[in-house]
Image (tube, rainbow, N blue to C red; front, side):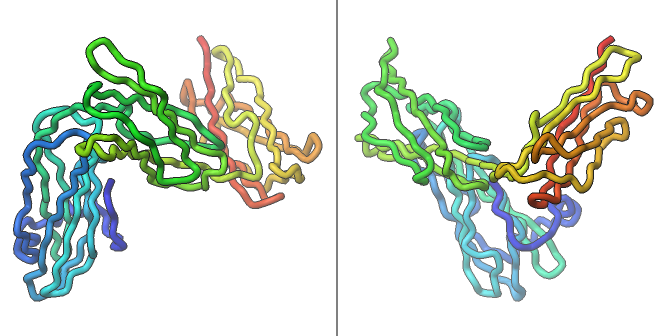
Length: 331
């Protein structure tokens, strides 16, 4: 995952302006490559690259971007005055990666005056894979609560699992009693539960598995949780599919808008991404609002059509609801 600075330079422009000599000339690195030898998958792998601004002008780090999602850079500071020193740590998540020679890199994009440049910093290692987790990382999109599981496997004599912990009280994890496969491999299910009270927003969490083997004292599994906030007004159904035979207009589809606190819903404006989609509304029944979606066959240029309508609600709260719309025409 890239770590972005406060500078608002488009990365697409960097390719046109980069001058390779800048970073090595202005920023002095004792080493740009670190060979760590043999590393066991699941063991911590963090290496620090130190550097110094040996020039006469300030140097800003525009971006520190890893070459893969399994490596995360951490930069000590984004602007170096002449004579200042800084460092970037590259933290590599090795679980789930294939055995054998591997490399992970971070690219620093730098700016000095009007001149741009970059330098790549790399860790080399040979991975030995004894522990496997499937999937090795999770990204969960949550609206309410959510339960899922991961599968952990390891040689029977390698270690015993002591405990499992997470970085959030709203994320629960427990590992089931392991079962043994024929070839001396232990398999165990790691169950995860995102609680209903997990805060809205996107967060990076970790699940830590602690064992009785000092070489594998802690196995850290990254979990990205993206939870949608509670919306006051919701659409039922949340999307619309219009279907008809060729030469005939699809029948209209009805969608209800309901307030979470059962207050009256009033629509201010409706816009459609495609002119072939027509959407009208009326108050009721009760405090709800009723939408009627239909297709204007004379304006239908794509078959099938995938589009959307955007409903701007002004009561009980200001809110915009997007409803995906698909028109399917059967021959």
